[in-house]
Image 1 (cartoon, rainbow, N blue to C red):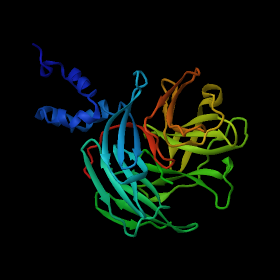
Image 2: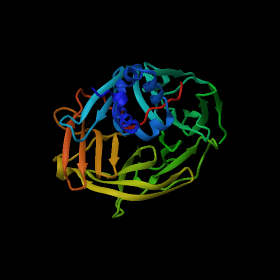
Image 3: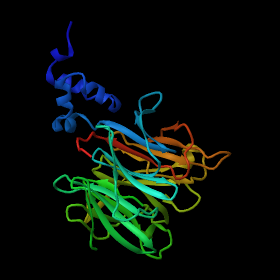
Image 4: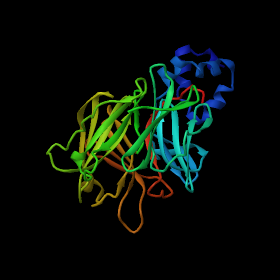
Length: 352
């Protein structure tokens, strides 16, 4: 009988690359060879990162959910960890940064699902609920957390926390999106009303430890006023932005960067869609950072949308360029503050 160890090396790697994330530790403990293989950076780079995950928080649990658009049940829960109420989190290079709240106490927790490690991050000063966070890494692959500390309106100080050196410090000068190690923030001018032309991007370079210049966002193709954007990332390599009409409509456009750096950005329109003609809903109350784009298959997944009706409804909407729609019930209802993030996940060997 042929054993898996008798298979060609490339076929063995291809089989092991399909192991679900939650089963990796069990498979690694099977033999020294496989344990070493799963610790090989080249194997992870070449074969992992193909799995598309959604990360959902509900109460004191954070769940990893696998998404496969070709299954009868596209969304399936594959793992969880217990934390205090989680209001925000950021995915960066296989690590997850959680902002947790318990009463009036705010904490930061870093989680590596691949290694099964969690770690609290101790602040220089007490965390505040209005603080803003970014998560990235420098040219030496040192992971760092950026914290913008709000104490009074427009009175902001900056802090950096280095996971490797366990040291926090100030930098002279709501959560960021991590792309290529830098964090990008959706920002608006002081005193501006919430309108499309008031918003822009700021990028933070964790190597230079500084913000770049103001970066422009795209506008709806006909130039009409749009609602505040939803910002997301594509494989942590590109930024994705959702533009929507300001009032009483579900007309949307999805734009993707073809160049993104802390000091420069350029955009291409990916998809335009009118959700009202597809879903029958006339209003959209909330659309979170749960925004996923598959460039190759021309698919967009809007995650956790809540619509008016007898009850608030949380669901994911899968849309293709040709107008195909599939709605997926996400299960138990989330509060309006519960986060939902979609991302391609690549395991990390970073010890935390």
